[in-house]
Image (tube, rainbow, N blue to C red; front, side):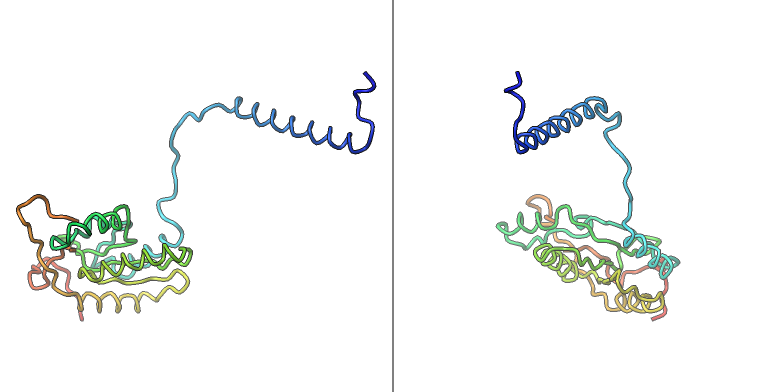
Length: 207
């Protein structure tokens, strides 16, 4: 029996390390068994990040009386595929759009016509993700929706932001109407109202 005991200091160290490892494994197993499965499968999370919350407060303070601010709007609710896009490119374009969101959208309060989009600058993105986001934002601009870029590291003053938004609305081009081919659904061209068709319910801006 005595022969089975460690003799050298190295043997004692090895035995101690093995014993500690066994104890930790048993402790983790017993803790998991004691805790059991969670009673509820879901838990709450923050609706806005600190940067998004600050941007929302700034936009509401700046344009809240003239435009309604919507947060985290899906791009597939803002854009649809150009019906003239070749079939081979439609799936690729749709996958690039699917699941993506625009940080904020400013709409007319009466009829909720989209006027301006707002994108937050995200310096934490990788180089590949940054290129992907840049292409998406460029696609939004090409479709006719003016975009404002806000950097959490350098928030503009409400006055400066208001001037930029109003200038973007003034430059807003007339969006082409969607064309239905009659051969199925129109694929996910941004559909925005023509500025000339604005009715008396539209907010009046002093440009």
